[in-house]
Structure formats: structure tokens, C-alpha cells
Image 1 (cartoon, rainbow, N blue to C red):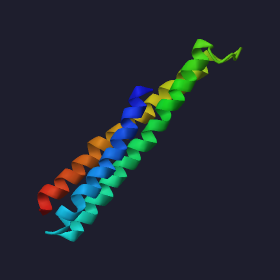
Image 2 (spheres, rainbow, N blue to C red; image 1 turned 135 degrees about the vertical axis):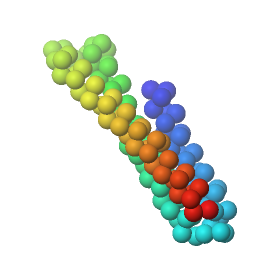
Image 3 (cartoon, rainbow, N blue to C red; image 1 turned 180 degrees about the vertical axis):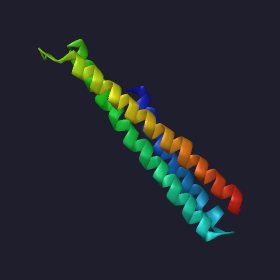
Image 4 (cartoon, rainbow, N blue to C red; image 1 turned 180 degrees about the horizontal axis):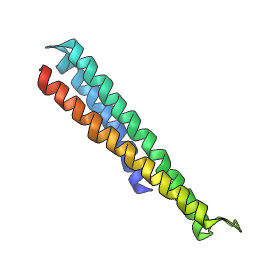
Amino acid sequence: MVGAFFEAILALVIVGTVVALFPIVKRPNEGVALGHAGLRTLEAGIIAVGVAPLLVVVTLRQHLTGTDGTAGTDLTTLVTLGNALVAFHNWTFLLGPSFVCGTTTVLMAYLM
């Protein structure tokens, strides 16, 4: 739960850095500034999408422990679904901060 909170904060901070750096990067090349803003916003969006599966896994974990009062829950299905959601989160982490951020860094280094 704390990890999901920190990733949501990360997405907001990424957007904040775009807003802060846009006027500085715009001076030498406005196209690069727009590309940087677009890619960083895409990165923040991918991170935000990856937060949702973490929150769903927390809910599924409550079903596994039986703290929500449900009876007769199929544990195998819940574990499989939980593993799939964690895998989805891992893929969003690979696409967002790893791939898109790397692409943005190469764009900035090459065109500046």
C-alpha cells in the first residue's frame, strides 16, 4: 500500500519536473521541449496505470486472509489473479521509468 502511494507521488513529481523544465528547454529548441514534455507525461501516465494493480492486489490479499468476511473463496483463482496483476505492474514499471525515461534521456542528449 505504501509502495502504491510512493508511485503515485512519483507520477506527480515527474509532471512537476516537466512543468519546471519546459521554459528552460524551450529556449534552444521548442520541438525538443515538446517531445520531452510528451514523453515524460507518457511516463507518468504509465506509472499511474501501474498503481491500480497494486491496489487490487491489496484487496485480493484481504480475500486470501478472510478478513473481509467472505466464505468459500477459490484461493487458487485469487493467487493466479494476484500473480497476473503483479506481472502487469512489473511490465508497466519496465515500460514507464525504464524505457520511456531512457528514450527521453537519449532525445535530450542527442538534440541539445
